Image (tube, rainbow, N blue to C red; front, side, top):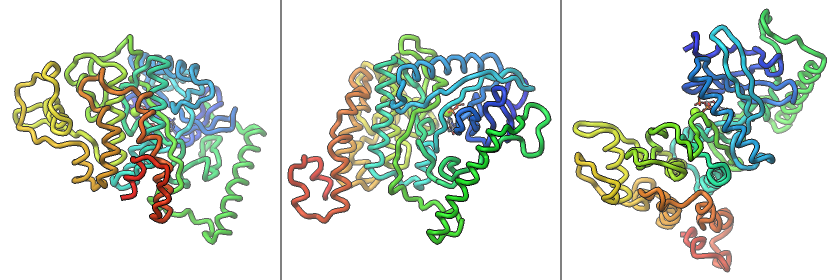
Length: 415
Ligand code: ADP
Ligand code: MG
């Protein structure tokens, strides 16, 4: 893909936008782009630089994404809606053509990474709750205020505001920004101005301070191994990747969403709107809590992937109303319920399973019009009343007095 019309090859130290941004290391990539950690010499901050493939259809898609990201930034001047912020955008000409580039606030690991890091065991429910609140805040903002459907919500497209491993976090680890290509930079590298030299010095001093602190803690400069423990990590996150987002009154594609997070109305091609994002949200919340995908359909003998997907949905959520469901080739279904699944397969306590499925189950309504909105989900007791008590009850003794004045929901957690 690194040819005409494709990705732009980036080397560490490459500069962009007349020297303002300097590539530090690759962060990730998608179908249409590569994403680099870059240093912004103007603001002295790290940013994420998303460099689009150059062919016209990719440029078109990037322009659309920029338009959406601008609307998102304009509607949320104080940047509190849990959606990634576009800082800047520009064109970059390279050997493979002209690439549209987006400069985004730098974020950390994706929720998919977080799930892997936690060894696919599922996160503690109070972590799941915090993450759900962020995602719902983002969805409520996108849906209600802007009229935007994300259309590709999934753990990979939700990034933490910090990285799980501090030694890999350029900010927390005090990494020195690279200001020029290591082995000389004949075309387009920046010469180091006195300001940049000062920045470098400042970063070196920060590193020195950190290793001093580590030494005083007995660690002698050794970076500790990640503990695979998320205690004390503030799990705030933001929704990213607006490459497929659209305005609800102007749907772009008939088939949207990544397979496992796809809503039934999308599979049945009966039209979609904001509620399709809510379905993906619920699939994501389930995956955070259990470590496994809610639905992982496969095609097989005599049935398609779509049919398997719908069958899996019905096994867990019950029969679809006849008016939206009319498939012939259906295998024999084994019906179950969401809270049984949580107890039997994922070893939730009865109370946890009942409360969590009480929150999620309404979102998994086959009829999109009946699904709660993001705003309605934000009001749900599972997100609001349980949270604090959960922590308290865990850390305190099982003294009955702890429960005085608490709701039934909170009391259930003690068992
Ligand atoms: P695509 O539309 O090509 O899928 P994404 O916007 O999803 O592109 O970005 C691809 C990957 O780059 C993400 O999965 C993530 O690993 C990384 N990434 C994207 N945006 C950021 C950001 N703001 N901060 C840090 N990493 C990012
Ligand atoms: Mg993506």
